[in-house]
Image (cartoon, helix red, strand yellow):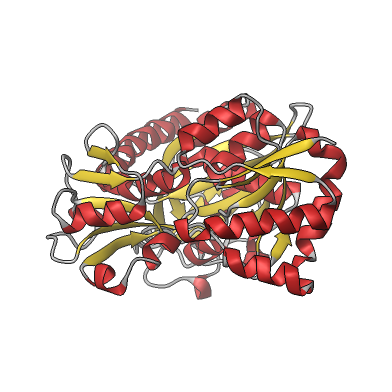
Length: 248
Length: 168
């Protein structure tokens, strides 16, 4: 029996690792498919796996979803109900800036390698004519590290996935301030399947859309912090891809 | 398209008649009141191949002052401001009809006669056979300095267009 490979965008919070394994166990039972879950700690590792066609199922951020659909023939089946991806640009609470227009070239920016958050963050700095050329960009491994650099005065600005920023401790958040927050509402993580799973895609979609209806499905959703899944049509996916393309 | 109505306008206004590429014209009423572009938002719309609006997000509704029902089904030039030269839009149409992405600074007209300033990206949407089936336009907050440079250029272009029309 074929074993399909599943992975998850490396921007998931570390406390959800177990949740993804629970999800995979549930998904295999619900669909009768053999699925191996491989979690990558960074985007590079995951990108290489995609390049080498070692990924069949992926829970991807909007940027990677756009690439997977356009270049690798993936199809978006579902998205977590009610969840959208937004980004925030953050500085220290006592920093001398209160708006994007106060920012000047030369500032030190801490950013993770999450491509969707980076794109949104840069879009929000554009009105102040800031870009990769005139900022000192420090790539960091995680959002808590970005927060630490801000608090230690080693970075002036940082980009966060809004959800990740909201999950920082209240003590940390009190020492930081949000300069600007994206309010797009049309970008979201999606559950995608690759061409090798074409004949099983409706089985997978149905399983996801009804997941919240059984106690075991509900438990697995809770371990991911999701309420349920909702359908993504090809038109919705296209719309999201166009947004990402426009922001590049 | 219907003329703009004085009862929709906020503040003192000037009157212009705009003639669009399809030969239709419309009376527009214009004030000098700017609605500042909100941080972090994107205005998104889609049109069919003729430029008729098929989708408008909430930011588009909020910034244009029209309801979604008033926007859907109208040509995108419902937002055309008389300070914008025709050549800017000609360049945009030539670019997107050739299957490429157009980016530029645009002054848009609101329903209440005021205006808002954007940095726009307009791109064609393709079907699986590679045919253009419509366009997506995404507008974001522009840099103030680059916007002012663009407006100065547009003022020159507009003056030239008017001089040419006068000679014709």
